[in-house]
Amino acid sequence: MKWNSIRTKMIVFMLLPIVICIVAAMIVSYSHTTASLRTRAVEENTNLLYQGYLNIDSMLQEINRVSLSVYSDAEFYRQLDAGYDDISANISIYSSLNYMYKAIPGAYQVYLYGIKDNKATMITQETPKRWQDPAPYPASALPEKELLQIQTTHPSHHYGLLSPFPQATKEQVFTLHRRIEKIPTNQAIGYLSIDLKLSALFGIINQLYDKSKENLYIIDAEGNLVYTEDETLLGKPLQDDWYGKPAAGFTGDQGSFEMNGAVFIYQRIQSTGADWTLVKQIPVSNLLGEANQAAKINAVLFGVALLVIITAIVLISIRITSPIKRLSTYMNQVKIGNLQVDVAPAGNDEVGVLTERFRDMMDTLNNLILREYKLELSSKDNQLRALQAQINPHFLNNTLQIIGTLALELKVPQIYTLISSLGKMMRYSMNNDERTVTLKDELEHAKAYIELQKERFENRFAFHYEIEDSLLQVPMPKMILQPIMENYFKHGIDLSESGGWISLTATKDTEGNMAIIVQNNGALIPDDKLRRLQSGLALSGAEQVKPGEDEPDGKTSSIGLINVLTRLRLVYGENAELIVANLKPDGVRITLKFKVQDESGE
Image (cartoon, rainbow, N blue to C red; front, side, top):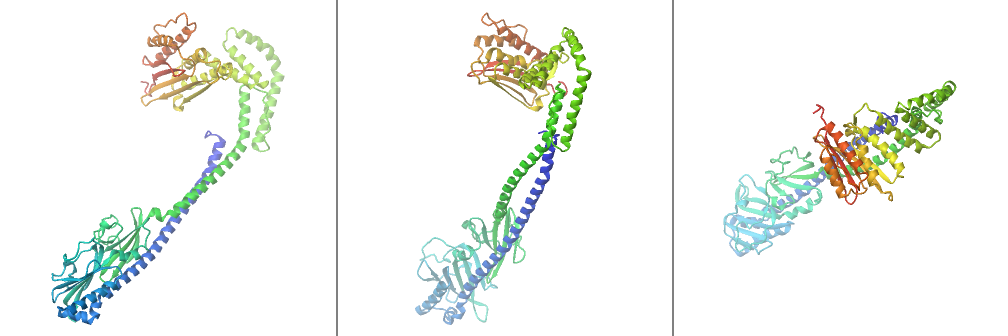
């Protein structure tokens, strides 16, 4: 469709506001939906992490409560303060530590160091109860101002008690360290360390996030990882760019922020001996999954609605503009000389009134012509044309127009098409004022020639061409393409078959080199004739190849192609080429090559 047509403008200007409104509605709806999903997800996960905080805090408080049993167990406290050497004292100590071990779900081992007797005792699931006489293990020795501390997740160890403990597989644990003091003074009488398996947190953590879509972190006050899915990072500083340094980006006890295509929701856990931060990472793509799904559904519905709308608009525009197109066709008929065109009614609207006025005008015009000029012209003009036919080459062209008009009057459009094609060829060939034409002119002349040949050979061949619009204005000598195509009908076409074809293509590279290729699937040129033809073309027309006696029409085709090449070189210089080659299994390719002038004329 052409932009300057009413139909195109109607379709565009009716579709444009509809598309804009629908797209705007989709964008607003998507933005509102995504914003609502973000807000809802942040609220839900904030509440979820707060519940997780309460559960973790409850677990840590329970561990702390169990560790305080060292003060509530008077016998244990007295023996730790006074020292213990006999078997009964050892049994009492073992019993108290074993109670702590059994009372804490997920406990891995319990370590006690008594300062009075310089003795270490450990309860573990891997070995029998043991005690040794080393110094207190450094990790369990708390600073003087801290009574309780929870150590970040780390691989389990035996607090320096290497023998007779076996070297078992290390477990990821976090540890509660407590300094036992002599009340009411601050004097330390022992150290208690309780190792808990990291799996003790799993029951709480697994309820807080979806492992397949989200990530969860527990970070201590120093920025070390208490929990993450990657066990190789446990106990190490978190290096992700969204975290940076400890406590970066976290304000208050809970909140959220968005970074790197993900939403981060955090909850601070401040419990006895622990200052942790619980962080949940949710990719935006997962967060907005529902919105994206809704957007896809809306897009499909939009496409269906747009298709229905386009169909309706096109049908309406065709209904409105078809009478205008028919009126234009009537005018073209009058333009070519058909004054007896049958103008059909077009309805009662403005276009119908215009069509009716045009029909009245044609009736009036025909009546005037018949009344004033027809009789006189029928006698004098025929005498004048008979005289002019001897000196004016346009006589034949005008005669063809009269025959074409008569064919239309007799409603034989096929004859009119052939006469019109022959008329185009004659006008093109008789216009001697133009030595150089455009590729578009040559193409139109070739198409008219092809139309005549289709009638002659009863449509036993097909013609197709492929030329970019930007190449149609390339200048070239007149009568170049027809002589090349003519060889196919003289020598190549198979009259017993109907699958013949001839094609025309034109290309130009970035350096201005032009190539025009004419191909067909006709008979091959015999090798000896092809060599002589190629030799003649190589001589640039200076010497014409003389065909042998077995080539009655070879001279014509050779001279014709050499003439084409000679005229091409007169326009584009000696570098212009005409190449003839056979195709396999059958057919001939003729290629014209020349360099197109640039805007400067070089």
